Image (cartoon, rainbow, N blue to C red; front, side, top):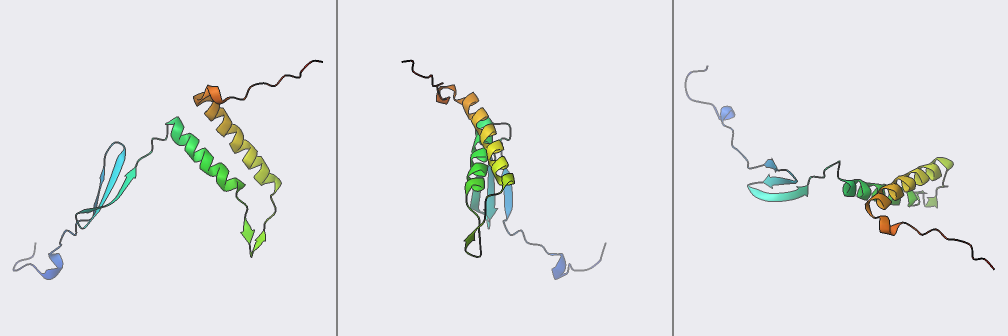
Length: 109
């Protein structure tokens, strides 16, 4: 331990930047004022999974442009879209069975 007066370097001021995390909310403070409030998602919540799959599907379906030209949709991209769509439909129809498409029968003459 040093003797004498404390130097300026040892003085540290609290600037008021901190984060407070509760069960489902995350509050970020800057200079003792609320800067940002985020909702913490529960990874096991099926509605959160459904929303993430929908965002992923939208991103995959969005066309990619390189130097102003549209990039070709590859077989890998089509398979990824199909796989994501299947998982989205499965989860969606488990949560909302009334949305399941009805089976179409051929009309007899």
